[in-house]
Image (cartoon, rainbow, N blue to C red; front, side):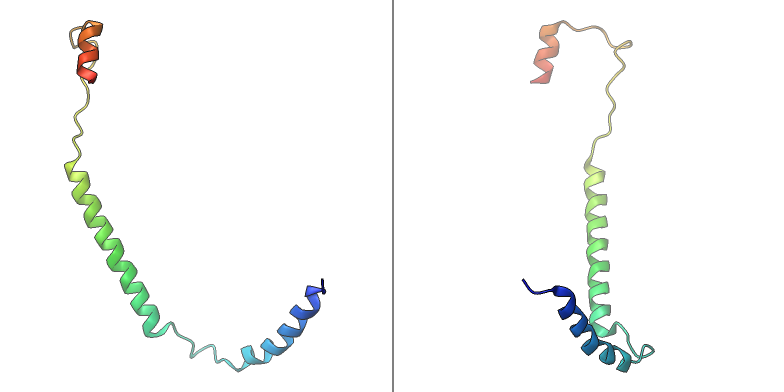
Length: 82
């Protein structure tokens, strides 16, 4: 298998001049970056709205304390589980 460091070194010597030609002040995300960001924002908004709707349906009733409730026989407790 050939040595990979030689090919990486050769590739870097060809790519470094290309990187020097790019003006760092002119590189922007552009329209595609804005569209992707806007799509992600709409997706997050939709997920939050859906989560809020589903959380509104959840019943948060806590079970009664065993000390306050009358004790049930094992048969009655088994029937309630079903």
